[in-house]
Image 1 (cartoon, one colour):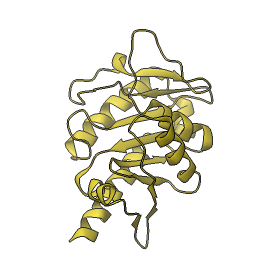
Image 2 (cartoon, rainbow, N blue to C red; image 1 turned 120 degrees about the vertical axis):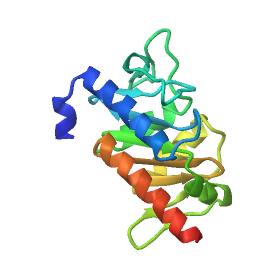
Image 3 (cartoon, helix red, strand yellow; image 1 turned 135 degrees about the horizontal axis):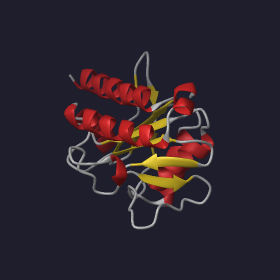
Image 4 (cartoon, one colour; image 1 turned 45 degrees about the vertical axis):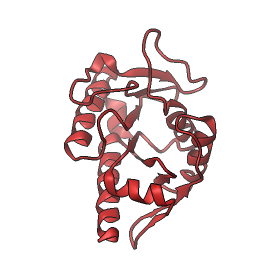
Length: 183
């Protein structure tokens, strides 16, 4: 979290754009599916916009969200999973970055509604709820109280870490583990 304190809001916006491109390059997001966010401070976080093309997104497209009430910048449309990110941040003040993917192998676990557990990882599968719903946000945020990642039933994967770069690494590690388990 120390790194985040030294970054300006503009720096964090640029980091979100760069990490979004990396997610797309790594195949961890498909098309406009998936989203990522970064905590600014105890009151605000930044999140990718709804329907984001990760190869065309600009820093000014990133949406600032109030952590307390979920309000966001006028004229912008945050990811439909804004509430999930908000509740995770509220429950986990240690997290500085969150990544939500629709990666191929983690999505197999999601479709089968199976936990992703290895000797190094323990990512439970959240009970099914409609994408973008309060129920999904609550289900996932409760699991994330005791875990750094979570399979979203019939949906995808979400993880969080101290910063966005570390969250991206967790998402990549989960996808690799899921691939190895399915071979």
